[in-house]
Image 1: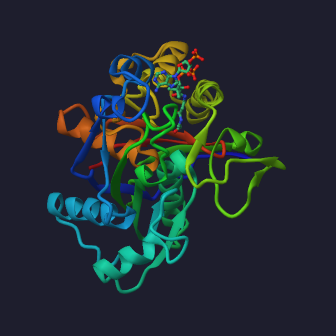
Image 2: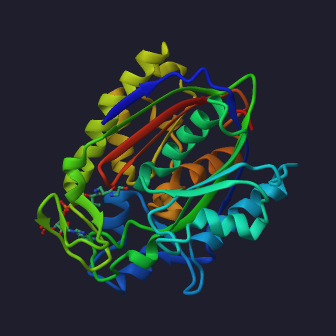
Length: 331
Ligand code: UT7
């Protein structure tokens, strides 16, 4: 499946909030759990620390705190939100959805609420849906979240995965606006590659091949690395060309923060200056659908992103799925 469109957007982001749990899991801590070293992890992934949810803290709790952060920072109301979209591969339950839990917590009176599953492309996919729903006239005010408690599905005896993942959440409000800020979006899926990165659910097979049905994240790191780099290097120029933009027009490239080496390889191949990328995994690890809002928050906090800047967001991950959006920053 592949798709690309210009939405003549009638939507823009009006607020952003984030949250990460208190507990820090450092590379030194991991040295005590598996046969690894701080040097190896930093050199191969760029990750130094990750945040870990408490035993009784779940994805909905992290999302609620990200929304509370957003409410503290901006003069907004959730009362008239009419769609809640939560991107997560670690929802509290299969159902009820995290979105339903959020509706109840904030007592939002008249809203649709659903979770979407697009792994590390989840946040960008949810943003694309929000833009599409608002631009079509179906919804006016959409609460979009990317939230994960990946530590609960990480095998801390598997050194090839436990070094990567962490927990966190990000929330944005997307509202109807005549000066819509979503410039162009694209998405592409390669279902054949699903076997390379998964967490088992009900079936013990993917594409007729047996899988480890242990409920933990399983990945073929090398294949995921190659898929990620090749997809980004192919799809980003296609999106920019189709929108009449060049890489030089992008103020900030915000790819999913999976692994610093992936981002470096993509920048090198595209001749894009690495200094204009935002990356959240150094201190938060790979937080899947939360990694892009966390990176944007970091960019805002250090005064890097300014209103009117052009951002290129690109999510990619288990599926294998990819979703990117070029937008004007309006917060
Ligand atoms: O959101 C998407 C999520 N997934 C990703 O982004 C994953 C993308 N892939 C990666 O990040 C990298 O493939 C990894 C970081 C997972 C692994 O790095 P690599 O450079 O591809 O290492 P490798 O799998 O080729 O392994 C090289 C060596 C192996 O030892 P031998 O066979 O050469 O003796 C591994 O056993 O490194 C060993 N190794 C480790 N050594 C120390 C694997 N994990 C570790 C470790 N510490 N944590």
